Length: 405
Image (cartoon, rainbow, N blue to C red; front, top):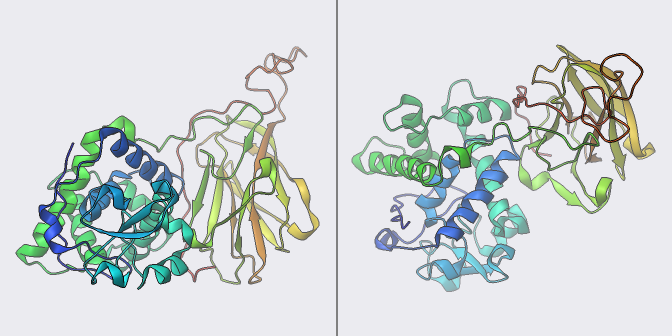
C-alpha cells in the first residue's frame, strides 16, 4: 500500500516538517516493513497505557509516510545513525534549511530541538529508534491535551481520552482530535480551509492505517491476559505500564533477570513518572513481593490497590537486595487492582528503582481435600502459587501533573 504524504503547512515547537514539495512524493515501503513499523508503534504505545495507537500511526503517515530511515525517503535529509536503520542514518526533515545545516526534525514523528546534536541531547539516543520516537510522540500529545481538552488533567485521563477516540469520520471526538492535532502538532490552529484540510488529512491517515491492519491487530487493551506461571511481573512486560516522560526512564542491566529501570525521585505532591504492575488475579488471598536492588531511594512508597482498598508500604531501597515482601492481601479479581510506585517519594534526586513484582496465591488447593490440586506438578489451578491469572482491563488512576523528574 502506498499512501501520499500530506503536506505540512506549519510546524509546532519540538516537531519539524518535511519539505513542502514532498506532498507530491510517493514513498512505497514494503508491506512487511509497514507492518513491522506499525507493530513497534502499537507495542511502544501500549507500554505507556495508550491502546489506540492507530492515532499515532496516522501522525507518522502525515509526517513521513511511516519512513524512519533516510534509505526509505531519499527526498529527505540523512540524520544521525540509528539502530532502527541497521546503523544507517535516520530520516531528517529538510524544511529548516539545507541538509548540511543539520536542522531538521528526526524520525517518523519529526522531533526537533535545533540541530541534530541538540535534538539528541534533549531526548537522548533513544529518539533515533522507532520505539523511542513513538514514546516521545505519546508524551508530546499527553502534555498538550490538557491545554485544549476539558477533563484532561493527568496522564491517566489523557490516556483515557486517547483510548476513547473512535476513528470515525464525522464523530465529534474524532473531529476534535484531528483539529487538536493539526493545531498542537503542526501549528495550524485556525478554521481556515488550509487548517481544516490538514486536520482532515490527519484524521483520514489514522483511519486508513487502522483499516490497513485491522481492528484485531490494533487491539491491545487486554494485552495483560495472563501472568507467567511463576507469578512474576517484570518491568516492560505485558502487565506493566510505565507512565510519564520517556526521557526519565533509564534502563539498567541489573536486577531481576538482569534488567530493571529507574528514575530520579522528586519532592512533588504528585507523581510525574510512575509505574503500575497489574494484579489480574482471581479472587483470593495473595502474598505480594517486589524485587529491589541497587536503589538509592530511602522512601519508595508502593501502593497496593486491592479489593476496593489501597495500602501503602514504604521501603528503603538502599537497604534491600532482592525480594522484599509487601504483605498478604485479599484480591477481588475486579480488574482494577495493581501495585503502583511513583517518583514523588518526598525527597528529590534519589535513584528510584523499578523492577519485578511477584504474586503468589496463599489459598489452599481446590476441593479442600488436602491434595495439591496439581500445583506440585506445575498445574495452573486457582489455588497454585504463581497462578495463571485471568483477563482483566487496565485502569490507570488519575494523577495530577507535576514537574518532570
